[in-house]
Picture 1 (cartoon, rainbow, N blue to C red):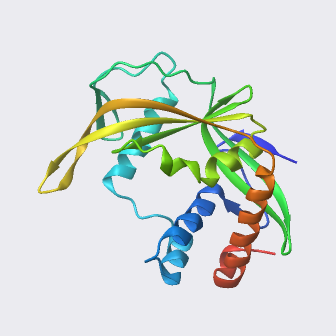
Picture 2 (picture 1 turned 30 degrees about the horizontal axis):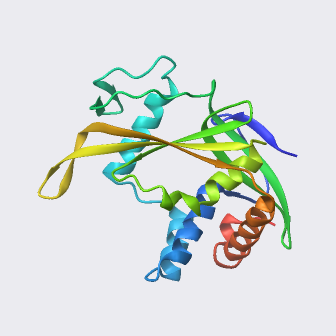
Length: 218
């Protein structure tokens, strides 16, 4: 049984994992230099914040309230966003929705949790703020596959915004971002998609049960 709620009102009991953690493991498997200790640390402590991630979080918060667009020079959480190009972004009405979906695994029922930036009808959207437009890096993502299942949708859209940061000595100067491009990248449900997500959930559940028992209740 799927469950929807606003992202700040969900309480989950029992064994659960997050879609972002599925992505953490997927990236680790593709990283030839990734270590077991590094993966365990990321799953236990979460990602280490950097200026790009802080800017992305602020931009997502700004877009959450953007019913009629975002004004040039808008500020959120200490970041100011200017726009060097005009573009139109069509966004569904429901914002920051969280979903949960149980999966039966050899370890018992595991609930997969994730939240989208907006949803409506059969379409789900997620905002990305990135320094480089590269459609290929999203193709293998488990995020869009999982969200299509969890939100019972037929189309998942990455709203990708390309950012330019001020730098000093190759280090980002926090506080100002120029949004230079917008790209709409859709993905669609396909036969066998649930099996692919099921396999990823089982793999991560088994890993966490072995290496992070304090995070995984059975």
